[in-house]
Length: 169
Image 1 (tube, one colour):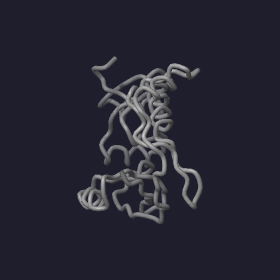
Image 2 (tube, rainbow, N blue to C red):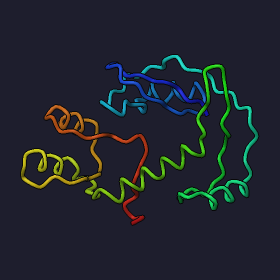
Image 3 (tube, helix red, strand yellow):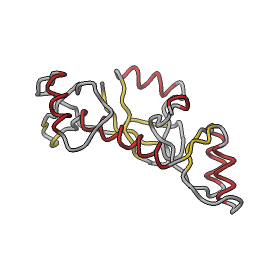
């Protein structure tokens, strides 16, 4: 897995994970890589430090033991694919901890927002214009609708990964 530093035409910085340089280029050229801030598909790679994996993989048993001893619970049961390493640019990301943090974030979003599905834009507008009380919502909107919401001054955040599966709760 390659982690690229990316930026859109509006200079919003974000990361993207790809299987290979060709995967990035293919997805970008097909319009599948978009800025999580503004939705722009004009995305380019920026300078990034290569990751050098110097540690051994953890076994599933050692990950399970660490999880059972941890004060915090996690929904993840798969072992970490990589352990932290150090490069000339400093410490690397512990992908196991990153996965746990992402899982906790997704759980927090699910627990503290209401899923409105395809009615996201309608609900966001109703709250923005005072027709409904403000509350946390999550749902879906296509790029064009998301841009219209932004132009109306409606604040929301696109997430770079799914936080809900409507049939799962």
